[in-house]
Amino acid sequence: MHTHLSAFPDSPAKDNPGFATRLVTLTVNGNPVVLDVQPWVSLLDALRDRAGLTGTKKGCDHGQCGACTVLCDGERVLSCLSLAVMKDGSEITTIEGVARDGVLQPIQQAFIDHDAFQCGYCTPGQICSAIGLMREGKAKSRDEVKELMSGNLCRCGANTQIIDAIMKVQENQTR
Image 1 (cartoon, helix red, strand yellow):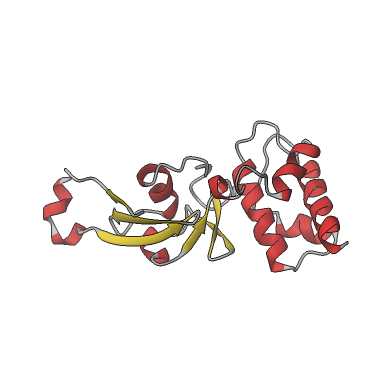
Image 2 (cartoon, rainbow, N blue to C red):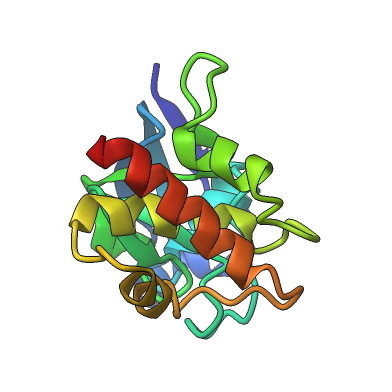
């Protein structure tokens, strides 16, 4: 099933060729989505405002906090710094697509087990980043995980529990 969402259908910019919208086709959480967006619309805004997937959070909107992290073709990206048109044809996974058939992804369960979220605002970006980090296979030690998660900030101070959760999942994967 295709979802076609038009951005700003009544905008005066629609008659100005300099502001022409572009069709962007994405696969979001396994579902095809077609968005009609201006070229300057960020992937974050396209996902939240056009596709209605509000699990991805807008934090700083400058790529400094990581709250907007999603997986794009399996790699973690800051969706506030990515233009939707740049990701045309990509497969996007947001926090809404991490669990499958009602079963939490192991990192989601580890976050619960290790009390790795306080207010929960950064949690979607932290979880997507942790999934991407583990796929990258670069972080083997606690210090490496800490360094590679440094682009995701938890203002509540749950960083220690977040690293604990990631280390636990990595331990379970190597057994």
